[in-house]
Image (cartoon, rainbow, N blue to C red; front, side, top):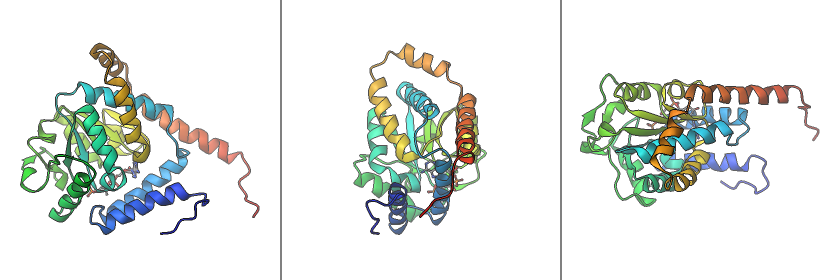
Length: 258
Ligand code: PTJ
């Protein structure tokens, strides 16, 4: 689609185009387009920028991944369409495995998501076909099927754009769960160990940058960062940011004179 360079919503429209393209390639589920609309709405309320609370969460998320024995990045359709190259770079930087995990799972989509990641530099992608032979207990959606070499044995799992059930089930298994979710009120956001309330297109590049910096930091300092982190406070800050923005907007001039 030809989006004029000076269109005020150009960035947002370009992101939509990436999802539509992913949908046409069989990577994104039709429901993924709807989920993106919900995300867009929260992004709008957040002013479409990374806030300090997201930076704080991203740093701690990276600390967890760097200290983990088996960190895994779980990838769904929207993530694969929006940030495939960045997922591969983050995995390389923190030494994580990449696993496909779909809510609307079909063999065709598993393969399309894996192909998308391999085309963007991934060396190995877990969770496709027979490889997803293990099961997350007490989870009844298709997301329960995981790789015994990946999410099953992971101690830290990054789950961008997730649904709440699996986050809760992974927590019950004793895993540290890192969520990227623009909705600070979603069940995922509230059940995760660390929630990055930001758009995935900004959050993953930010995590790569942080990972490059924190990689050389002493283990004890990373552990201290994790100990002093409070995810509830981060979610409260996200809600306050939305409140503040609405307060400012509600007392400003809203009419546009064409
Ligand atoms: O590819 P599949 O089959 O695994 O399906 C993926 C979707 C996203 C369709 C599936 O996981 C789903 O239905 O998710 P939900 O329950 O709609 O939750 C998605 C969450 O991600 C919502 O809270 C959205 O606000 C949020 N979200 C949407 N787009 C973004 C986002 N968060 C960060 N960045 C985004 N770009």
